[in-house]
Image 1 (cartoon, rainbow, N blue to C red):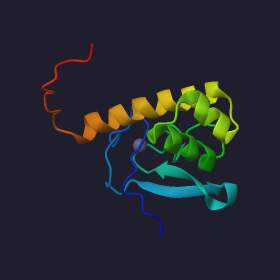
Image 2: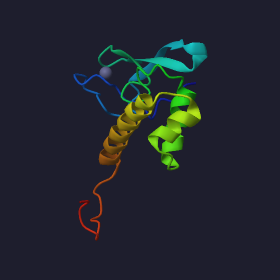
Image 3: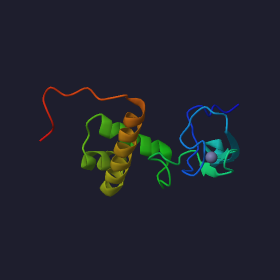
Length: 124
Ligand SMILES: [Zn+2]
């Protein structure tokens, strides 16, 4: 049984758009040895990749490589260091970092009621 509680419809015109755990989604197809699922929304009849709306969507990188890039960045490796260590182009690292940063910000804005004020003031 697929656990789709963390997924939501990605169609902005759908009445269930962005709502998780409402039971409107099901898995309608699988690719890449079952590692990539195509989801179906029974509210709007849309089909979309389970990676839509994430930094991994439409990435030509294998997902384990993309995850490794983000792990290196999260541990403090620079863009050039990460690119060298993993044998990828530095532009690839930059692109993924920007996508992941935006995704993290969106997730933060959705999940966190408000951000506490930083006593150090705004970043200059
Ligand atoms: Zn939908």
